Image 1 (cartoon, rainbow, N blue to C red):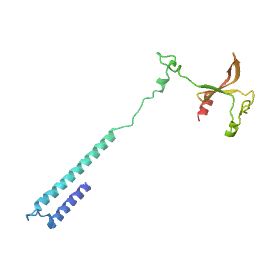
Image 2: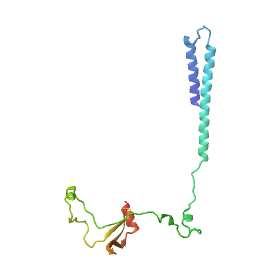
Image 3: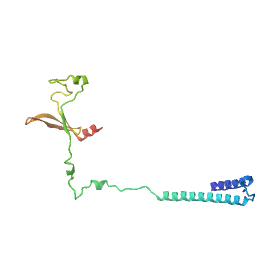
Length: 174
């Protein structure tokens, strides 16, 4: 309300300043005091109307805020854990055809380019594992098991001796 009075006062002061200024009179020499008063009154009314609209909008916003409340969601944990009668067994058939890259690692080492260039047929590269240590089996680059090398029908294979626990697999991700 105070702002509305300030705007009315400003409009009245502006109208008074226009009356005092000789330039506010039209070129024809007629008296424009009545027109200036009407213009000032029109400005004051427009400013008051604008202020009233702003106050109404604030009041409407406060009413909407008072009506709103925090959302409350139902706990669905028990329903999700409960077995569904139509599906007692998980249907995982859709992932059975996904190809995976499986590799067995005997050991690793680091070489300088100079050492690599000096290698020839019959050269021996020392690995970081000792003889008799288990091979590591990786699936898509992640360690999943350990085992020992075997020969089956003149081909190498790996006999699994230790499967990595889920806890160890999670530790590898970090």
